Length: 343
Image 1 (cartoon, helix red, strand yellow):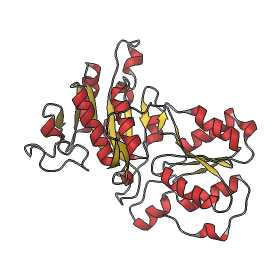
Image 2 (tube, one colour):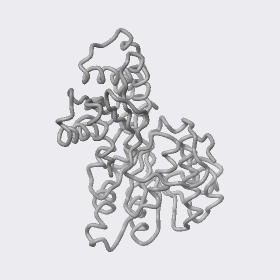
Image 3 (cartoon, helix red, strand yellow):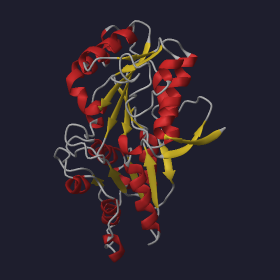
Image 4 (cartoon, one colour):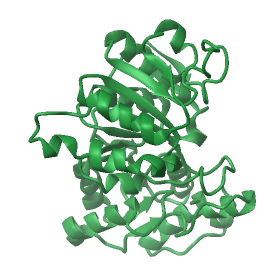
């Protein structure tokens, strides 16, 4: 049975159902209980673990503010038979524990010839919108997608957040789970029972015939708004949410491009060696003969996220930019209605 849940509650429900199903699933990080000694009555950073310590006192733990230590502990726990879900809070903090992720979690299975696995989920918030400045607003999924041995997930809806979290917990490889902070309180229809959404399976959010728009995380909703506006002027966009960046559902993306002949990629991360550039290169390499216009990318600039609200709004890709990119690849003139501000 489906009902309305926020993205955040959907993540929490996935954690609860998986801890109940499998006692090897542990959830820990800073403020997962709510602070040492409070027994879950306070804190619970952002809320997905609220109340879980009372139900699973041996499976939900708080850690000190020591990312290198507790992510390293999670790698060790995963390698020795447990299934930890570790909360890094902001993905920006991964810099403190990058060796544990890059050189330990990602490589262990490869280095021992498949005789060990690291079934670890690393949860982290990402993206702009909350005015948190350069050290709490980055979009670093492209960095982790580049690393072989890691799986990277970036759900854009509450239902996907639950199904992908369950799939990530049950996966035998380390998964970095990107949760866009501006989606946390967005509700959606979520089935009550446990379910998995396979990693590496994209979702066609809106079918269309004139241009393929691939968008990640919060940008999926922006792409849908742009597609609605373009539909008013007779352009039909197919919006694709990859959902997992590694493994990537290349067939769904390239199949759509072959049919529409046009591609726009929308992503909050920086442009150099970013996800948008990767998809553009993939299309140029694999389906160049099907393209009937230049591939366009809509990304943040190659700069850290600003703290000023005005500058942060200008930094984040906008609906207006997506509309302009679609018209550009189709070589169609901009309309007066395109100049309206969208946020």
